[in-house]
Length: 441
Ligand SMILES: *Cc1c(COP(=O)(O)O)cnc(C)c1O
Image (tube, rainbow, N blue to C red; front, side, top):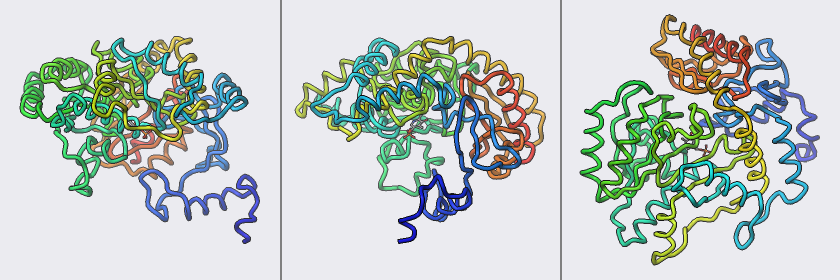
């Protein structure tokens, strides 16, 4: 009873809150009870996160992560705050079955305008993983509708990440995604080798031949090839030559296979192009968007497809796409997404990303000389320092906070994708913090 009558959480001391967090709350990829104590964020504004109490002497830190690719405009942006407020005053949510709403219609229309031409239809859902589920379902149902149900497997390359629900998991890197834990439960997909690393590294004909051989062999069983274009994010922060995407486009056409680009991390300018597919000048049959879609305010994702796929499904024996989440087309999320997209398109985001790229490159390159550093790479507003050993995350995180920066390393990677509004001083602070973290990790 005492617990239930407890005062509002905001009135509880930080210590007490953290103890409750540890007792009751799962964190990403966490154990229970937690082995790691998270830091309590009290507020955030611009590029700064404010802790409830100082950590390592720092009350405020520069955000080097954009809350996992999402907060491209920084925090508490007046235009995004206003969009949420205005929409709350009208309607926060209303079901999408039989009803529609202006923010969702506007957003879908805008996404069709912004993405490559053949993408014309939009499925709005609640998270990236669900979006990948929908994209895969679209592909499989398309072939099933055409009477070609044998085509239901997927092909991808190793080193990828597509989300944590089961079908997305089946196309994540088999080692990174710990497929051995789930053998017998995951769809058995076709894996090509990891694409050769380096945006500027010339296309390797041996790797192209490898893709060719796999697609020729498995083509009759494949519904789609799904990849993250140009940047493999949570699977290892690796960049590849966009030429491989052109190769995949040609080969999937040749073998009657759909091509899905998962742009959930790369979309909305992060790699220096509005969508990473533009580096290759090719368009997929299905594209997944998420993360930065709402500027980091709310969870929302979109699967876009061509008219050919939409018609294929809608003229099949089951003429509907069999998916419909409760919070589909959520007006609040769509309203803030509209504001975020307009904010992005209304500013010279490409100049910001180019400036950040140059500054990150200058700041991080000297890290190649640090002991234990295996590689340093930068593309767009993404900077990566790869070590030759696993990072001690707790130690590295605290070292970064002592430098006044929030970083969240994983595996052997200390990396940043700062908000596009980060200024030169922010980027320099982030680069210094990455050095500091690499030295102690
Ligand atoms: C984050 C991510 C997902 C999953 O999105 P969630 O919103 O976390 O479910 C899928 N694909 C890629 C490329 C991602 O980076």
